[in-house]
Length: 440
Image (cartoon, rainbow, N blue to C red; front, side, top):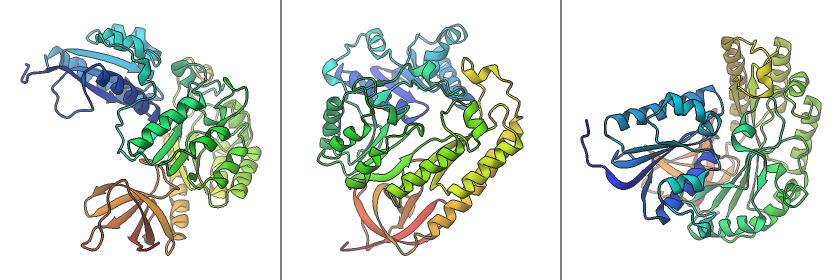
């Protein structure tokens, strides 16, 4: 039963999944606003006549969340609480035909590169002059910064090339224009994202051009931190580390999903490397940029993973002492090369192995954090929560990494989006606690 008046020109954009989807939603919202739509991100008002759901199709849990969200708004449409429901993003790209049959209440489904078609359906113009413009959904002082789309890698477990297509780099001059625009709006931190940062430039410049891009981005006035996410280990361009060491506003931070620590598993996954080569790469990176924070992501329970393979990964994690680490349980994805194999590691074993790695990492993180007590760090403050101002060091990305907590008091006032120096007074597994340092 309809209980409230819907605003006819209001669009509510719902974003599921990763930072690339956040970026895509922000671009969509800027286009809608330029077409005189009243647009909000994940509005709590429930008064929008149009809902656009930007879906994730990466692994089972993410797919289920996307499906549940679509069904929830399809039901809302049947109850008269929404006029139109549109679905875009990775799940829609991958399963459009099935979704159309199963959820006919949805007005239209769009793929990951269908923005102009989606806008046309809404009787909106795709404004080319707005390319790169976004309505930020993050706090105004940081932004995800997508430098390329798609992936050409042959990883057997991954469906991203199916959903996102072939690698396509954005030209450097366009990215510099975007960065200047963001800086003018108060953005201080850019988090570079792509399916693979290290492939950047190969398609348009015929060489790996990430270092060239970083040199130019680091000169954009107002950008104080540049952070690198999602670097592929095989063929990693080491000159990137020279730029990182040279330029003070490039964070000593690298997110490099390594996926496994067993050579046999890495070869089965077609990662183009071995555990031995990976260990040497980690050593070389740490030698070139002393103090760098390395984040990685792993997979537990890939088809054929034996107890010996897992133990090899466990021992490698213990030796490597990653600053930040996450682990997924393997998800058997249709139309990937690994789908031809039997998903032979039981779900409970996958979970046990993932939990064991995270328990190990918790201890590593605790030990590393204890070493920070008494040291002073530059911190960017993101939010206030309860009695604490909460921020991050250059070694931490939002939502996934450690945080720095400074207790509120009559003596300190911290404006969100500002930098301040903090001396660490105590630490636990994933959080640092400290006090403001004046005059640094």
